[in-house]
Amino acid sequence: MESSMNGTDHYANTNPLAGNKTLQTLQQKYRYLLDKTTPHAPARWVAWALLLVIYGLRTWYLKGFYIVTYALGIYNLNLLLGFLTPQVDPELEGPTLPSKGQDEFRPFVRRLPEFKFWYSSFKAILIGFVVTFFPIADVPVFWPILLMYWFVLFFVTMKRQIKHMIKYRYIPFSIGKKSYGSGKGGGKGKGPGSDK
Image (cartoon, rainbow, N blue to C red; front, side):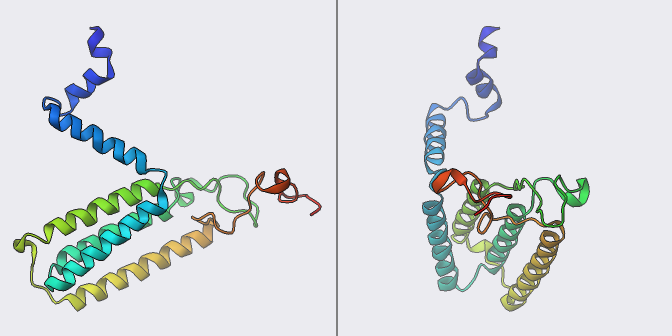
């Protein structure tokens, strides 16, 4: 009875790979690597960009796998929408206080956090790269139509998202926002009602 209360025994009962010690060790090392890279956002995004460039060069060299690339584009567009959307949709649940004309929707908590956005996109591009080694996935299509359709979908979706951001007055990025209590002087002169 006492062993069932232990978290590792519960994990062993729910994980189908629990019987294999080698796979468990690999999972632990993989998890450790992910935990180490979490705070290093610039390095992670550089690695993501390099993988995307490598994937692009591979598909350009092979002159194929347009369906795989289109699927990656749609999936990453979906991730981007989750990243730009607040966790609590003001359209469904109403705006939070304060509701003055100058205020923005606060607090802004993303539906999809930055790390999960990066991690999901990185995995998808990596899977897409691996798929390019299987010729069965190279379905012949007229790629300009796919590209045009993706751009139309992107612009329509972003237009709708930007209208939503303007209507509910929220900005998904912290660039240009006021910061309180930081900087020199303990944050004096930055808040409302200050003399400076």
